[in-house]
Length: 407
Image (cartoon, rainbow, N blue to C red; front, side):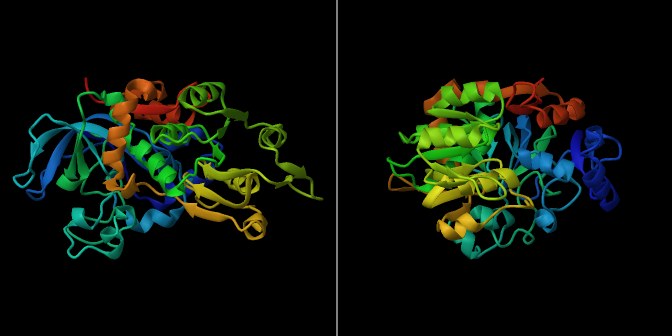
């Protein structure tokens, strides 16, 4: 079968990292680290596993960071190559191991891609897994499968950018009939957004700022509203279609990311702006909680300035190695800055519940409200066009680019 595969090559990686920003076509060229490869169809390693037939698979920002070499090399020791990309997946069970209960062939499922202790057959589980922080598993290089933080970064599991891949019985969640494939494929990024929102522990009177109106930024609005929060939400959006979707999903105030951003922000929040000798304005006042869903050097610096003293900043986007951030406001305003990485077990309304389980419940309530986020669809053979489209979704009026393998 054919699959979009990432291969490890230091010379190719360095070339892409240095020259890709000048020639974007290099990212998917024959000189890149990805290829459409002919590989064997995977076989169940133990009776605890399931073979999944892919229906839809999304292209995530972390996939693009890997392909373009723009991400941090931080995670490179925690992958095993060659790996098939794709961790945002809705599929159907094609083959079921003997120790997998409650599923029959053809059931629609989504996967929770984290490859934690329970997936790796490690007992006892590490401290983080015992606490429900599966994404922070301390054994991601050990156990009965190769290194990999998630499905889509491990050579043994395969990934959603292929017709078939493998998932452990503890990774799969049944998709209700009420959810279309197009909504189900959004569950993984929705779970990421939901985890960040729940981690923020919002109080009803707090003002919220979301920086970035891509998939995760828009889903952060959706998550806040889905759990019944009525907080005033401001969002910074770059493109007109993002601003429209943000309003439809429940944002109260929408700011363009242009030269008037600081002035408009102060006008909406009552923050006071002061201009130092060099650099951006310094603000007194601002919002209580900021979700940075981009996490570039510019947006992190803005987030720290826009958040009032004693406020909270959550990095929901993947920061990589940002430079030229003025951290003075963290010290002076005593800000709480924390990461919000993927998902696990949440404490919601007095219930301990997996983020994915809660996410499915909330998506059922929203039904097709998120459908406008699904944009361009491509076959695996069109992977070059798909990746180029995903890197330019904003310019082309799209949000989420997906591979469609249902034909």
